[in-house]
Length: 129
Image (tube, rainbow, N blue to C red; front, side, top):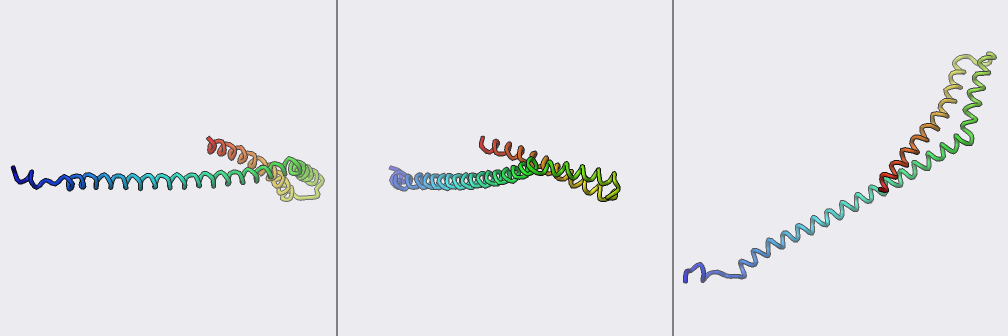
């Protein structure tokens, strides 16, 4: 019988085989844990973004509500007052331009809030799907 066959020890061969398998199992567990942690971090990021958008929607709704209840009439009053006062000579051109600009800014804030509101709604739809 050759010497190599006599010196063969099955337990040492199986130990090497199972040692590499154990390392692969451990690596798989670490990879699985890493994926789980990454998914939790992503979930938290989505939730944070969701609440941020909800807050922005609430702010936009306040601006829209203000314009629809008070801002629209205030803007019109500023514009009408500026035109009438300038025609009657009560204010100079610079004051006229400032009043018209204030009137336009109220309307622009409303329009910007409306745009932001719609964009935020689309963002929420995207996050929920």
